[in-house]
Image (cartoon, rainbow, N blue to C red; front, side, top):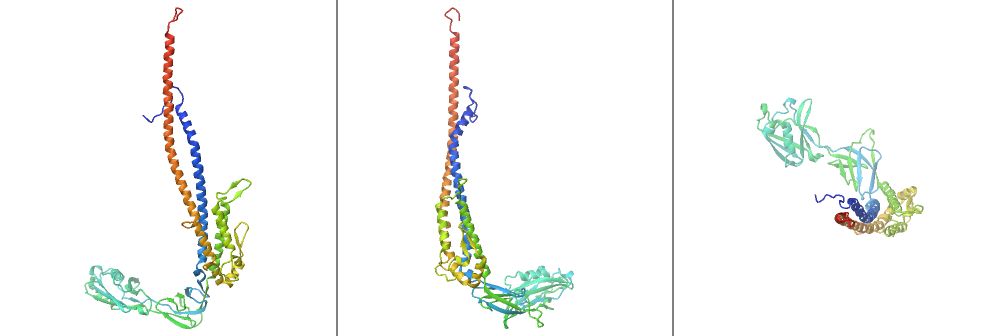
Length: 466
C-alpha cells in the first residue's frame, strides 16, 4: 500500500496534479537540453560517417590505379573463340600468335566386360584389385560382403593410398560394367587393372574375372598445339609458359586439313580497357566526395539554414588539400602526361571535376605507361592522395579522432540522462511528501479551527441566553 498515492484529504486539493506539474517544470529544461545536445552529436556523427564512407570509396578507386600491377596487366583476345582461352601475366610480351589445336589431352579409361543388369547387385566375392597409374600402383582388398560392382568402385575410390585411379559403374543396353579412369590426363597416366579372386561370389561369380576382358574406353592422349608452327606437347590441356607469361587452356580441336576449322590468333596487349574504366571510376568517386562535402557544409542565405558541417575546420582542410593535390604536377611524370589536366580531367566551380573522354581515350592508347607513372609511381597521384586521406580516415586520422570524441560526449550524455532520471525519481518522491505533509497540516489546522468554533458556540450568552 506504500506506493499508492491518494488525493489530499485535509485540504481537498488535487495533490497528484500539483506534484505532476512541479515535476514536469523541473524535468523539462534539463531533458530538452540533453535532447538538443544528443541530436546535435548524432547529426555530426552521421555527417562524419557519410563523409568517411565516400572517402573510403575514393580510396578504393585510388588503390586500383596506385599499384604498378594495374598498368602491367595484360589482355588476351582471340579472333576465333571457343578453341582456346588464355591468361597472361605482366611478363608476357605484347604480340600476336597463331594457334592450332591438334589434339586435346584425354584421361585413360578401361572398362570391364558387361554383366547382365539383373546381376549388377550380386556379390562378386572376396579378393583384391591392383591398380597402376603411370609408374605407381596400389592394391585394394575386397570383402566378400561388400563386393557388388558399386561396392568395388567405392572401395577403389576410398582407398587411402589411391595413386590417382577412380572407378564408377556404367550401365548401358548390354549390361553393367566397372569403368576405371585416371585422375590426370596424358599418356604418362595410363592405368592398369589386375584382379585376384577367391571364387566365393554369388552364383559362382569370381572377382578375379574382372580383368579378363578389359577394353579401352578412352585412350590416354597428350595435348598437341602448334604456336606459329612450332609443336608443343602437354600432358594436360593447360599449358603454361609455352609463350612467356601466358597460360593456355585448350578447349576444342581446330585443326582440319580441309580448312573448315580456322586457325586461332591470340593477341596479347596491355589491359588498357580496365585502366580506362578505373580512371572513370576515379572521377566518379572524387565527385561523390565533393558533392557530399558541398551538401554537408552548405549554407542557404534565404532560409538561413546551414549544413551540419558548415564552418567545420576539418572539412575545410580536407577540401583544400584535395584540390591542391589534384592541381599539382607529379614529380617524375613525363610529358605529355604530367598532371590530371593532360588526361582530360578539369575542375569545376563547385569543386567537382569533369572528364573529356576523347582526351582520356587517346592518352590511354598513346601514352599508357606514362599514365602509370602519373598515378602509380612513388610520388604519383594515387599514393599522395591515399596518404593524405589516411591522415583523415586512418586509425589515428582527424575524422576518426573526431568520431571518437563525439562518441565519448554521447556516452557522457547518456550517463547524465541516467543520473538525471534517478534525480527526478527522488525529486518526485520528495515533492509528494511535501504536499502530503502540507495536506496533513491543513487537516490539523482545520480540526483545531473546528474545535475553536465549537467552543465559541458553546460559551454562555452574558445577556442571559447561550
